[in-house]
Length: 457
Image 1 (cartoon, rainbow, N blue to C red):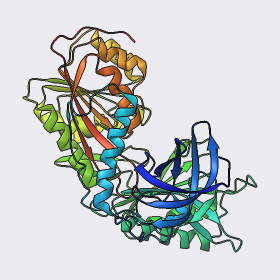
Image 2: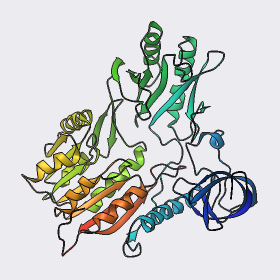
Image 3: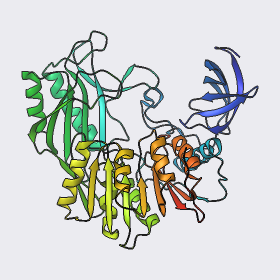
């Protein structure tokens, strides 16, 4: 097999990034916009050691679950991966993606515990409460909101995103008109010049918006932009983030400056209120975030006697929600600003049985465990999962229950494989936090084995 080869392929299963996977001479071939059950003629675009990547040249026969994407940018953008598949079928595929990861990365028998069907999202469009869009300047000095085409550095003009809350799209359009009128330059990676870089808008359930401009410097024109933005209906606060770092992943780092009106908006989960700032991490699908909290609470089965650890607690999203049924909840988070917000959120909700600590999770937890014991643990790590230090701590202490909230089936599986030395995996629940995308959110319930002993990795 070589690049540009063409051949017929039967698509057998779905990949972790939403691509179809078929096999040619026993080699896995990954094909975007292909669905299990389809026969496709493909052209090889890239070869790696044990796999190939290809594009569809022709559909020999199409799946009954194929649908026409309603997004006009779908074929170029890459932000969504499953919009060409009937929604109910994507829920099945997300379960398959999780099971495939468990089979690949663990020694667990996936039939020995319950893996629930994926819980659908109430809304499949307009569910994202936050946008972060790169900006681009046209040859005619008009400004455009964009998305980065998957696997490239190429910007695709996107004037509205269908999975963003409608209010976000409306505010983005108003701001772009103002910025274009003021003729503010947009930073160019090619020329290494310009001011505006990104536009971020987040909204709450009361249609209140917080706007943040990521820029290289402030000028009279950017001051005018912030002032006029603050006058747009529903905009409750405006910030500038000065960022001259161009390393990947550093978009929201830099000097944050509050410019106009409120400093935060309030978001809720159940009866709990959270003050949300521009750099606050909060679940992007507010409705499913509530479902997530309820699943965590249901699986913990608290009786007001338990001390619970919430590791990677962020702004106290889960900690505060479960606190009314716990004796005490102790949250740990690396980001100091998040812990400041968590403490603030505890005060505004009049919750007195929580403590929050900032620092490296494993280091803080090691110190805490020298002085006190805990019954249960909630884990909500980043996509990279748990590091070996954290897994070692979990394996050398006896927690009755561990609730592992994951947004990455591969790292979840790898972590469960090690944790299963001491803890039984009793159940995994899946919820569709990001409809039309291949992202899989899940909650695993682990319980201490009867004959548990300590382990070292």
